[in-house]
Image (tube, rainbow, N blue to C red; front, top):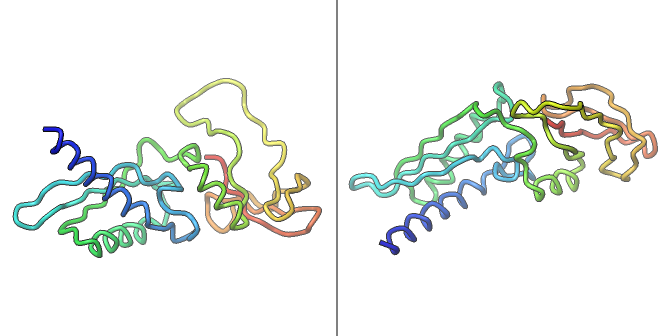
Length: 176
């Protein structure tokens, strides 16, 4: 019995590791695991065809155009590893939040020149005081002397800022 359980855990972990290699097409330095949109991976045995996998992902927002590319990239990654059948399920609830991003993902954003989200999201219906964002740190020079130029940047999940010290524009990954 223990060997069967260990085999299933190993198969699921292997499948998770494959899915976790898929990069976000809009921010290619982040994997879908870094971003926190990779939610669940399940492996089952198909009759005479080998392992099948079902991957659950949650978009950063309901209209995210990257989901089709991510689905195709997941299917390609699993096909390359010999999986017979791959199903990608898109779930909208619970809604994605920047709280799901990994610390490694936030560090990768910073290194890439995008200010990582700071603070925690108010997801889940928490109530209480409203958090104020006092400043966004420039990913180029680390100055807090920055200004929001537009609430929506290159994608809906980012805002466009400029540093008043080094004069460089940069994206800020908003807390959602």
